[in-house]
Amino acid sequence: MRAIQVTETGGPDVLKLAQLPDPEPGAGQLLVKVAAAGVNYIDTYHRSGAYPMPLPFVPGSEGAGTVTAVGPDAGSIAVGDRVAWVAAPGSYAELAVVPAEQAVPVPAAVDTDIAAGCLLQGMTAHYLTVSVHAVQPGETLLVHAAAGGVGLLLTQLATARGARVIGTVSTAAKEKLARQAGAAEIVRYTEIDDLAGEVRRLTGGDGVAAVFDGVGASTFDASLASLRPRGMLALYGAASGPVPPVDPQRLNSAGSVFLTRPKLADYVATRKELRWRAGEVFDAILAGSLRITIGGRYPIADTAQAHRDLQGRHTTGKLLLLPDVR
Ligand SMILES: NC(=O)c1ccc[n+]([C@@H]2O[C@H](COP(=O)([O-])OP(=O)(O)OC[C@H]3O[C@@H](n4cnc5c(N)ncnc54)[C@H](OP(=O)(O)O)[C@@H]3O)[C@@H](O)[C@H]2O)c1
View (spheres, rainbow, N blue to C red):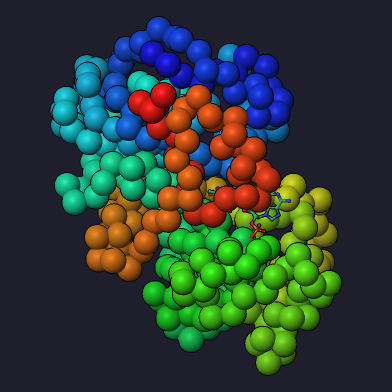
């Protein structure tokens, strides 16, 4: 099969197209012909070595496709079924071995590429707005990188729950997309010095009930300073780099606020929780209340370019790799 392989960690150029033996499903596993693989920020951390992986490895953990073989004791999913997943290492490939426990059946009315692109970022936006901070009607929230993959979905889910979203973005094109997703206010955070002051101004001095921050190093201080007393800072990523160690006393000074550094795996901890969150994401898509924006489709040979675009802030919405396109 054709797959992307990393034999040494580094920049995007270490993502090499390789011809590898077809994998076989073991006990409890499915073999899937990958229709599309999702590109996620965490893939760049695996590629660079920031999150160490045993070498060599095939990157990617998300995708959707059609089951072509089923290992022993793999449950009720059958050959020919369409499935999607967020936790199958080696998804940047024509064929992926997916643990049956991690496979989610794709509803008939959902396109396979939408299924490949909706679950990781969609379930992240879901757990952040439902479980980390249960968004309430009428409250104001701050969503950083509101035109990004997670950001567009956070904005839609939060506004659907009746919140007013202040979004941050870097360009006019991104502003337009974030507004279409429901953001009531947009701050071009690259063009102002006092982001927290601007958030205070937009909230009549009150601050926001929660900040969803996947940007990290460059936004953290302003995020903390933008909260209302007892607000929630959900630091769920580090697109601009990791946040240095934080003195807990800062949470006290900021108004008895909460800080969490969550990850999806802990919020889809059981098969029941995975099926519930995935079901809510698919239901919202089918109901028309959640729109998945595919910001780029790349032939798998152009994976390095996809990583360059994502890390270079050139993208919006979800990026997909297409193993079949040459
Ligand atoms: N914890 C979890 O469960 C979880 C799950 C999924 C994703 N994440 C995290 O969520 C974040 C967003 O992921 P995504 O895949 O949806 O990416 P994304 O938001 O589509 O892309 C990152 C965006 O961050 C903004 N950004 C600000 N400063 C940046 C910088 N110095 N370098 C690069 N980007 C910068 C850019 O938007 P502007 O140009 O508008 O500033 C950029 O488009 C990542 O940190 C990722 O690791 C966490």
